[in-house]
Length: 72
Image 1 (cartoon, rainbow, N blue to C red):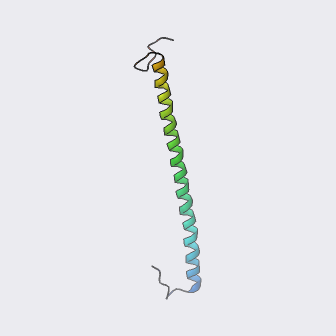
Image 2 (cartoon, rainbow, N blue to C red):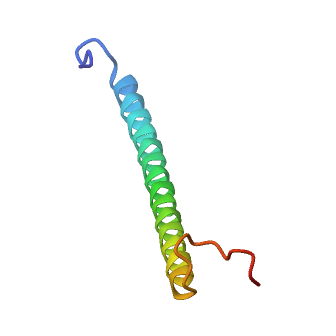
């Protein structure tokens, strides 16, 4: 992968440090993406639960279509 025989030890050390630095950056970006995905999933599931609650409330009001029919 890397030309070990031709590079100086200082250059190899610097390359290793850079790889470690960018590996941390990549891991942080992946963690951030996972957090966003988890938040999005929670929001979607909350939306479904809210919609189901509205349908259940409409059913309790004896409305089949889920609307109030103009009655307040």
